[in-house]
Length: 280
Image (cartoon, rainbow, N blue to C red; front, side):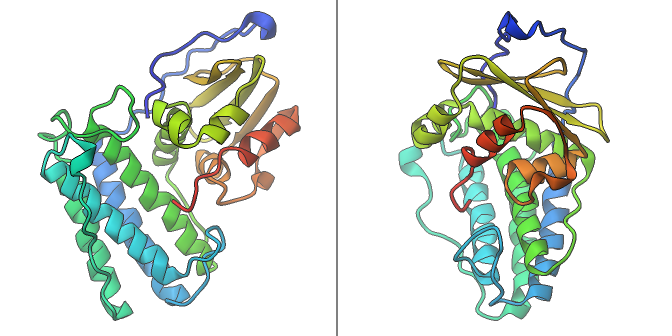
């Protein structure tokens, strides 16, 4: 989600911004990544078994995880294919998960390809409802959102199967950007008001910096809400590590134990404790 601007940080930190062009995910790259990460998810779901618990989604089994991912992909594809602009017209029917787990890989392949195809170049700037309420077109919002679902829930499936959850640096960096933008979006403030309130502050700054790609993100907790912008510079706390590790820590799929934290670690813990998704 777009942050709706790039507010300057307060001067108490005397930030000297470094040049830091953000990694822009090419739409075709994102479409291919949705299909690939959904394929990996299906493999780990089969290895874990339908009744296996999902460690990062309490109460969910692998069956429920697979159902959620496939249904979400079909649901989003329907929104884009029909060029829905009115939230009152959003689909109410959900795709049905096959009863035989043997059929799940093909079902997920179909849902991933359908939504990737729906996010065609022709659809990218077409009028489509944007659930974030930010400045992007609806299809660009949904493309990033479905990619996030495929990667982060893929990590859930890998964790359930006891497998590593690798994420390519450029994909991870694009999703970290999407993550911060979502947390500062109008919809987050409305739907997750307790989180939005908790991450307000009095000018505290947090820097997240990838070590395997030249991307960094700078957050300021302001009285009127948290803001973010691309860039690196002095901050109250800096968190560094591979982009994939940053993404999985930010989405609470992995503890930040393999990240380097320099400065006020309490700010990092507070941020992570107050920015969780609700089983999505």
